[in-house]
Amino acid sequence: MFFKKSNRVQNTIDTLIGVDTRIEGNVHFSGGLRIDGAVSGAITEPNDTPSTLILSEHGRVEGAITASKVVINGTVVGPVKANQFIELQTKARITGDVYYNSLEMHTGAVIEGKLVYLGEQAEKV
Image 1: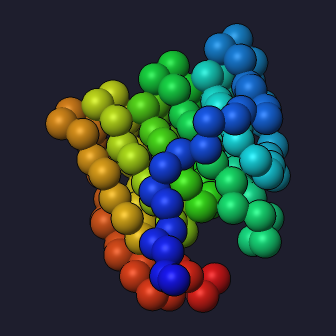
Image 2: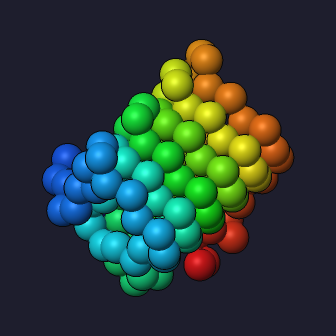
């Protein structure tokens, strides 16, 4: 049988960056990462492990984001690449290009940059 890749976000959060936390430097994660605080640096997942990044409405990232599944409701200054799925919720603010395979954008979300469809090339990465 053929199964379509799920666009569902995983329910487990392995790592939490709290509201009053600020990280300066690159973050490499696997599993589920939720950011309520601020990160100044790139956020990436290992290529062999599909992971989920959730950025809450209080969260802020200044740097590139690369993950399989991304949910944004905060502010990002930098490019965002979601190899499988990206959801931009109402308070999402992105200044940078968004690379996606599947995109869900709620009313109120703002992107100051290009939308680039990855299509079949995302599955090869």
